[in-house]
Image 1: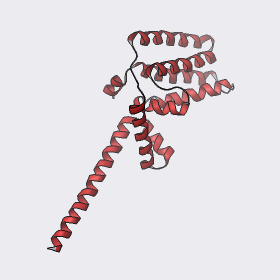
Image 2 (image 1 turned 120 degrees about the horizontal axis):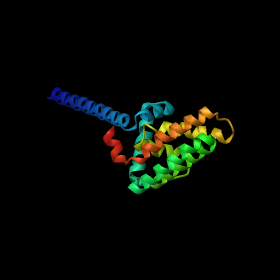
Image 3 (image 1 turned 120 degrees about the vertical axis):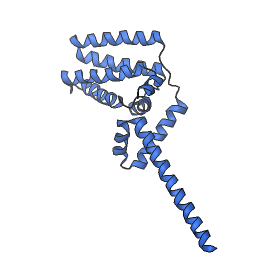
Image 4 (image 1 turned 60 degrees about the horizontal axis):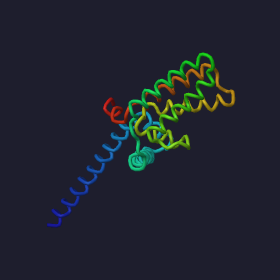
Length: 183
């Protein structure tokens, strides 16, 4: 009788361990799919997969529960698109001003979508939830824009910043639903 009870307990423990491992694997797969390259970046930054996944889950919950990210109205999308065309045209004559204006315009689009403005690192984290494939573009472009302010960015760097801003800009013009359907 006691042997049967011990066997049942062992089976329950093994089943619970297997269920836990399956849940962990599903969570990791979800986060890897949701965050794409941002997943690997966060794991590298955190040092441990478990810590990184906790960070990403907290980030996802913060955006979903506390921010009201919304798609742009068609007229806003058209207006921002026209402004982007002006910024790109400006690059020919004044690359530093174009990068500054691209940074400003991306910020306006983010604000119109409902992303809080202020701390850059928090903005990048928030963007990573719905736009994980271009958040690194945002970081790179922002870094170049900061270097531009101190005169440490070449024209080629500024061109690179414009390309990165454009990728983020185009992604922001789409709605989160459209983004998820394309993934």
